[in-house]
Image (tube, rainbow, N blue to C red; front, side, top):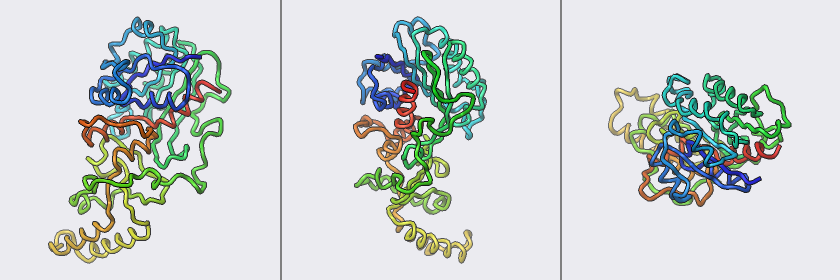
Length: 348
């Protein structure tokens, strides 16, 4: 089958890369997103032929029918469902686009395959119920998953909700549950040895602009998630990475765990011998000098892109700032995980 793919909430093109990863015959017939910075990145990598700066709520049944898509790939706004947000679900205006699509899906007869990605927590939402009801009205068979890249030998944790749906035939694996592994045995045992190490995605030469600044080292270093080259993990990178310290992603040190542990013990010794309010300038500087030895830095946008399985040819336009790059990557998808699900959607 020749696939005609409609990519909605297209961002920087993660779904496009996932479709390429799945090695299926076909093309992206249109990609739509309201974010002009994300669209500029999409154009930089794929050209301007199919990208449209559009509010998805303005998309009509007539327009979709004209495109004749048989596959819909989408990653709607996650903010209504995030743990950090207000979790207003369908009452959040950012849910309006998905609500609009739920009305369109049963009317679009050419659609045969759908894949949707969202944050963990979406599975408990009213928006999810609304989406599943739309799939059933349209005659789709569907399955749900919560998966993370570490299950695919990628040293990064990013639990996400996925739903795959198709019309032509039911799936060969059971429904009525949320799968937390691939049913075809495609996920790896995360307890086994030999998993990919962080060292494999690290750039050889990194600018000093990515070093963790002194004020963060002084005040926040003890709450940072610090990763060493031989480790096979990293935290989920969010759009707030480098702007906020805690819970937005890991930092990297080239030192061994033993060496950095030795330095941190010396830092803790200084802290225990000197109360915060009575630390002299000399003690503060001594503590900072020790922390400098850890050579702690942020992961670069290229390294974060690698952890999200974007190919090496993916790039940002010269005018994109690092802050924008992190925001865009934080809002994107893991290409390999989605690519494997596209294979599952179309094969099994």
